[in-house]
Amino acid sequence: MAAAVALAVAGASTAAVAGAFALREQSATGQGVSFAGMAAGGGDSISGMFWNPAVVNQVEVFQGEQHVTGILPTSKVDVGGPFFDAFGDGGNIGKNAVVASGYNAYRINDKVAIGLSITTPFGLATDPHSDWGGQLYARSSRVRSINATPTIGYKVNDWFSIAAGVQVEYFDIRLKQATGLAPTAATSTLKADDVGVGFTAGFTVAPWEGGSVGVGYRSAITHNVSGDLYTPGPDFKVKGKVPLPETVSVGVRQRVTQDLTLLGGVEWTNWSRLDKVKVKNKSGGGTITSLPFNYDDGWFFSGGVEYAFRPDLTLRTGVGYELSPVNDKNRTNRLPDDDRWWLSAGGSYKYSDRLSFDLGYTYVFVPGKSKIQINPGDPDAFPGQSIGYNADAKSHVHLVSASVRYTFGGPAPAALVTKD
Image (cartoon, rainbow, N blue to C red; front, side, top):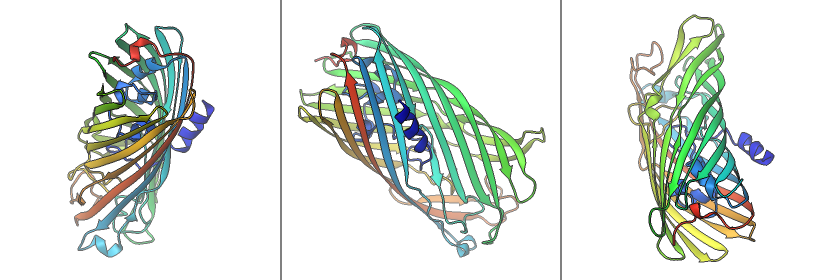
C-alpha cells in the first residue's frame, strides 16, 4: 500500500491525454484494449474499480495491484501571423511524465468485500518555450491530483453485485503567463490547491450466458481552491471554485469461445459544468481575474478483444475514439486538445497462481491540425489586446503501461464469475 501511495504522488503531474485535463491511464490491463469493458470487471485484474467500484466484488480473498504508465507526448503549437508569429513558436509544449495507481481488495465473507484505490484522475503539464508568440496566454501550466477511494461491495445474488465508495481528492494548480510580448516580459503566476470529497457507486450484472455488464459512476468534486497570485505589481491571496466533472462508465464483456472475449465501453464526462472559474481576492476585494474554460461534455467509445493464447498468456488489442470537451471555440495554448483516436495492444503473463504481470501500449493521435483562435473581446483575450491571436496545434502521444498483480486465496465467488 505504501508503494502505491508513493507512486501515485510521484506521477501526479503529467500531460493530460484524456479529454481536457482528465487522466484515463489508470490500468495497464485496460491500456491494452483502450479501456474497453473495464467497468464490467471480469478477467483477473481489479483495476476496473476506477471506473466501477463494484469490480471490488471479484476479489477472491486478497488481491493487490500496482500500475504505472509512461506518457510521451508531442504537442507543437505554431503561431500564425501577421503579428504574434514574429515572436516565435512554442515548440513541443508536452512534457514526458509518469502516472501511477494502486488497487487493493479484501473479501470479508461470501457477501462483502472492501477495497482501496489510489489514483491520479486529473493532471496536466504543458511547458512551451519561455519566450514565444503565445506567452500572453501561456508560459507554463501544471495540474496535479491524487485520489484515495475506500470502497465496500456487496454480492446481492449469484448474478448481481453492487458497491459504493468515498473519494478524497487533493487538487493542485499552477499557471504562468507573461505580462507582455518582449523576451524580458515579467510573469504572473497563479498557485492554488484544495482537498475535496465525492463518492463512487456502481453495479455489475451477468444477465446472459458468457456475458457481463457493469455501470459505474464517479461523482463531481468541487474544489474550493485557495492560494496566491503573484504579479509584477502587488501579490494577492486568492480563492476560487473549480467544479470537476462526474463520469458515467458502461462496460460490456462477452465470451465468444473459451479463449476469445469481446469487450466494449462508453464513458460520458460532464465537463460542461466547468464554465468559468473566478479568481477572487480572499480579502474581499472581489474578482481579480477569471479562467474561461467553457467546456462541452466529453465522450469516449472503445472496443477490444482478449484472446487466451495459452493458459499463462493472454493477448489483447483495442481501439477507442474520444469526443473532446475542447473544440475550436474554447481551445487554448495551455491545452490544445481535440477529438482523437486510441490504438492499443497489450498482454498479461501469469507467472504463478499468485503473481501476474501486464503490459499495455497505446498510440493516441489527433488527425489533422487543431485551430487556436482568440479574438479581441473574447473572454480569454489578453486585456487591452487589439490584435487577434491564432495558431495551429498538432498532437500525438505514446503510452506505455506495466503492472504487477498479486493474489492470495481460493476461487472467486459466483457473483462476479461470468456465466458459461
